Length: 132
Image (cartoon, rainbow, N blue to C red; front, side, top):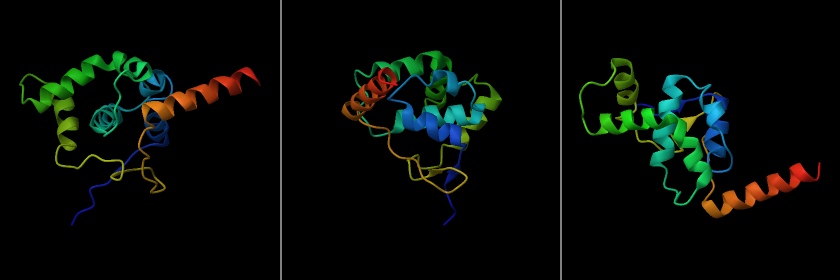
């Protein structure tokens, strides 16, 4: 059986793991187009309840166009840029899970924290910033 893992950058790892914790939209702009699409697909496919997550919404807003393209591809719409279509379709036959996305060291992604865990982490980060 062929290896279905995908190797990504350390930046991708950091963004994914902090997606529900803080604003990572600026860092997302530094990803390659291929990694950006993978990130958006992975985060939207994760089995985490993001309802009410302000940070999550803030991270998605700058990438509305890319999200619409992903949606259009999944609906089989025509008129999509060839490069975008090729990138998104390259992930179509793969099972997207944290176990299939790895960094150069072979480490697999951790699931993003739940809303409750993210609130606790944000609180700790704010307190640590204040008491520095």
